Amino acid sequence: MSTFLLLVPFLAVVILNLLPKRARVAAFAITFLVLALETAAAFVARFVAVDWSFLAPVERVLGFGLSLDHLGGLLLLCAGIVGMAALLVGRRTLAEASERFMFANLVLVALVGINGIAMVRDLFTLYVFVEVTAVATFILITLRHGGHAFEGAWKYVILSAVASVLMLSSVALLLLSVGGISLDEVKTALATPGTLTWVAIALFLCGLFVKGALVPFHGWLADAYTAAPAPVSVFMAGIVTKASGIFALLRIASSCLGGALPGREILLVVGALSIVVGAFLALGQSNMKRMLAYSSVSQMGYIVLALGGDLRLGIVAAALHFFNHAISKSQLFANAAAIEERLGTLDMDKMGGIAARMPVTAGTTAVATLSIAGLPPLAGFWSKLLIVMALWDAKEYAFAAVAILASLVTLAYFLSLQRRVFFGKTLPEWAAVREAGVGLLVPAVALAAITVVLGIGFPFALRVLLGGGA
Amino acid sequence: MAIEIPQSFWLYFIFFALLLVDGLWCMLATRNLVRILIGVEILMKSVTFLLIVAGYFSGRMALAQALVITVIVIEVVVVVVVAGVILGLFREHDSLDVENTREMKG
Image (cartoon, rainbow over the protein chains, first blue to last red):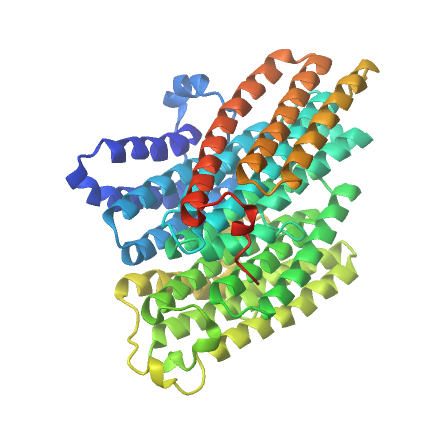
């Protein structure tokens, strides 16, 4: 199974490039199929027992020591759904055939990395797959030259390089102090920790904070998201930053940090800082994509904060918020793509009263923003509730209060977005604007439906997603 | 299992730290994009060196060797992509000044 998850996207890239030039229009269909398979794989791993032993010879050759668990399955599910949404957005917004072909290829390469991240069992392999994902993303940002594409990519590239240095020096120090780099060995070593081990772990966490754009390492995120073409920002916001930064943190917290205190303290402080700083930065933006980017910083802070709470509940809460936010944020970027396509601008000060002209876009945006802000009964409410409960159980009352109060700021900046873009009287210059095409509405409506259904059917969904972990 | 770290390790560690500071200085003291890339490379070299030293002192040279080779391969890919980004910036602005990457605000 785990070998398949790496080989299928890789072989798909090979096949795409072997296609004759005229047949390259099929690239999107093939990539879509791979992503659909990926979504299915998340459920196969959970419900169907398949005998994979016939793959044993291949796995001996490729021996990465990978294995898939519930948490990994969740990442596969997110990657599949978000990837399909990004492809649908790309179909509409990428004009040239060559751009579309490259987009399909790079999404598949990034998928190899994401699948790897879902299954790693040691820190160095984690670094390798994070880097695979990142390299594909650097190129994706510059997919369309001009604008500030290279500037956004440059910032991401340089900060990523710094993150690599941090993670690799951590691997070296762990090799020295623990004698091994697998998650199990590190966990055993942390039971009787030395200073060097903790320094190494802290360095690795800092590397992942850069990749996940948490405060104080968030400088690159808004520029990279804003500079990227619309489908790329859907893909990046939905899955790339989350897989390579936040999911890796989830993995480390769940399988080797335990409830040990210095590690928890780092997560709590960085999480709370990200929540507050991200929310206030979002409040001051007038570019829609920039506001969404800073809102991402803030929401990823919630996920990290949850990891600092009560361990068992915290992991469940973090995983659930991870899923909710991946769905809602990629949907909001798809909405932004629809608005940009019709209005030709993302400056919110120039918009006004779009709701009358684009009712579906306005409605789905409302669902996603309210879900992220944590209004019941949408999916985001439940995950935030669980986060606060996890913090309360760990007796971190101050941090729980930060989480609740920052929710109000979240609501404030999203209401400001709604008011400036959608509400009020339609400005005369937008009187002739029509609703976005079906190609852009399908992903938005589908993702909004997931948010609503998950919110209403929450108890059942929790059991399906996490195998009764709560 | 914890490993006793011999005194001689710190000699190597000082060299690693010097290389690290050198790379950081190279990144921060210049406005030229190519020089920043060189600084990043020096940083990566310092870490590669630390990996080798860690492998030697922990007695897991074979593992360290595998890691270092992988790191070198990844590094090559990253350098190619960064060089591509620098080329793009150069074609856009006709200069290698790092000021060109500070236009976005907010």
